Length: 444
Image 1 (tube, rainbow, N blue to C red):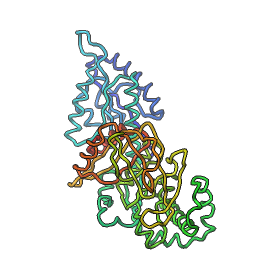
Image 2 (cartoon, rainbow, N blue to C red; image 1 turned 120 degrees about the horizontal axis):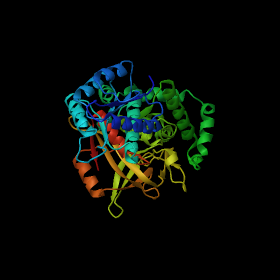
Image 3 (cartoon, one colour; image 1 turned 120 degrees about the vertical axis):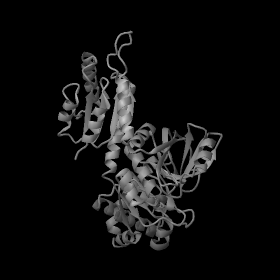
Image 4 (cartoon, rainbow, N blue to C red; image 1 turned 45 degrees about the horizontal axis):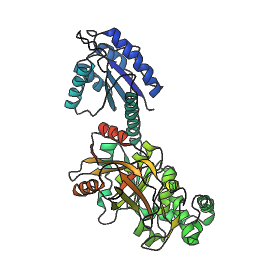
């Protein structure tokens, strides 16, 4: 089924239908610019009978319910009986305040609908704004993008490679939870299977990939030749598995599993997967991989993934670090992406660079509380113009809010040590997604 948006302009005849029709025409014109394929009735829906008739052959994946006038809770009850998808409730401001009768009373209609949805446990997004306001258009676009993301999650196969090391259970994906809350399908495979596939290839199978990478990473051939081609074979094993099994995101065990058994780290492999459209997290962090996927979907660009390792109060900044993984495309433009050796094992290739500056960035995490419920960590800021802070990869985020407060509160509240960083502001879209999923948001 393709993604489909439906527009439901509801009301009752006891209000000003001429005014309502004007608002309907204005709304249709605006919504067609937001989604040219939107499905809409020919005019206001002013009875439950009309509503049922319009909905009987529809299967939308996103619904915009607009109170053109007041409508009782019967309308929204019928909508919820007929469709099962994310919903945006839209209130129109009262057009005239002149001491005379109410023309529309859209706001009371919104309260009626929201009360029904609360009692039925239906999550929804909400906007109050005129059909001409840029802010209204932006909020509708935000909700639409979040709805498309939610829909894409129901199609996502998230690959879990191996197991997390001791002490990293916070990232362990649970199939039923991922399916129930996000609609995500968890696919598991042993790391040994991918290592065996990698060992079945020879140098000719990956030579073109190695030389393609050299154009992106200037110092690539500083790495031991044997390790370099071993990483190339491992990349092919992951890349082929993802393509053959319709994988959309990857959570992989890493350092000890691969350096000790295979002889070469996985860091560079996961880095290039991120750049090639397969959001990937290390240390077998399934919820980290989900966080990266969400960031990449909303920002349309690869995201960073790492640990908060340093607080700089002078610049109100947090340094995030990864021991060897980051998409080469987000490296600083002057130094470009570089490779090095792992800071513990001395074996390469691992990525080794600082990330570029951007005016807007979002730190994000799909986290879990002690009771098993999910929550979203969201912090807005910008990426500073900083060279690599430590061996591996780093990004320095100046946060909008006080950095000490962010660190102290997130540590005291037991947040996980892994975070995704989107290279743009996606905070509104994340809030809209959380509203649709019924997930708590903690803004830092």
